[in-house]
Structure formats: structure tokens, C-alpha cells
Image (cartoon, helix red, strand yellow):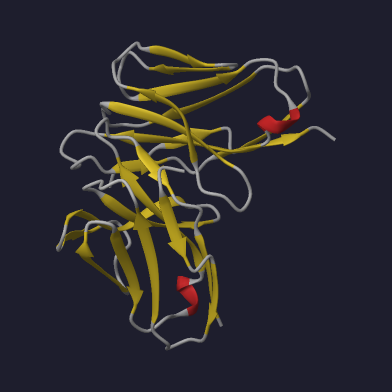
Length: 112
Length: 111
């Protein structure tokens, strides 16, 4: 079946640092979504991308739909403590009836 | 929260007992989904519905059944719960732009 490879699996951040994560696939996707999940809650949508090359921002978050349509990137600038959580990418490919495939998540923690 | 309510939020049950989880939406969306979330696996689709009485299987449907007799309710049933079904279950709805919004989840423990 379709798979998304999300990296890194985890990372530690220090307040003020920029953070980058990405998702890649061997298949072409026509929609990329990025979600954040806090402990004990459901995933919350951060950014939606619909076109190859599209670059979209939501506050300090910026996401890009890769030109090859097989990848997507999420950047967080000037991280703050409340950025801690798990970030998921999700992709929708043609013929999937709109169903999403999810990456396994990137866990952001504060550097001790 | 896209008007999604999951119940119960927490449940502990014994192996072999039937369990039903409920997802209720208030915004009349056609598509509804059930996922399970496990460490190391992310979110995996169990079943989805594209209308009243219209459902289909997802990636991990074995041991689960669903029903949708009304637009607003989507039920997930474990006919005979097993320990491997201990998980966090999320319901989602899909909007017109193919965005899925999630409920707060149900944490199920099968002992």
C-alpha cells in the first residue's frame, strides 16, 4: 500500500530555534496536509496544500508542496515552548476516494 | 472542533466483550472516518462512510464493523474485543476541500 516516510522521528528544540521536517513518498499526491497533536487530544489541522510548488504560511509555520508532488516540508520559525507536540503529514493521492495516508509523526520536545 | 463528539472518551473492557464507540457530528458532512492510533504506526484507517448506510473498509478493518443509520452518527463496533485492539480511536469528518477534522479520541483498553 501507499506509504509516507516522515522525518525526523523526533527532535529537541530550544526556544528560538527554527525547525524543519519533511514527508516523502514514492507515489504522487494531489493534496498534502500538516497536523499537530497535543497529548490526549485529536490532530489539529495546521496547513493544507493543493498544488505542486505551493508555499503556504500560518503564523510562524510554513509548508511547501514539493515540485515532484512526492514530498512536502514543514518549517517552524523561532520555536516556542507551546510548539511541543507531534506533527503529522498526510497525503491524498488520486483514486483514493479522498482517503488520507498519514506519516508516523515527528515528535517535538524541548531540549533539556 | 468541527462539531465532532466522540463517546465514551475512555473505556476499559474485557477480552471477548462487544464494544461500540460513537461519533456524532453536527455539521451534516457526508464523509466520516474511524482511525486507530498506536505508537510507531501513526493513524491507520479502519472504516469510512460516504453516506447513510454507505461504508467501506480501510487498511485495518479486521475485527471491526461500522454502521451509519443517520448522517450525524457513525458507530464503530468491536464484536469481540481482543487485547490487540487496545488503542486510541479517532473519528474524523471530511469537508469540501478534502480536509479531515478529528474528534478528541476514545482511549480503549482491552484487558
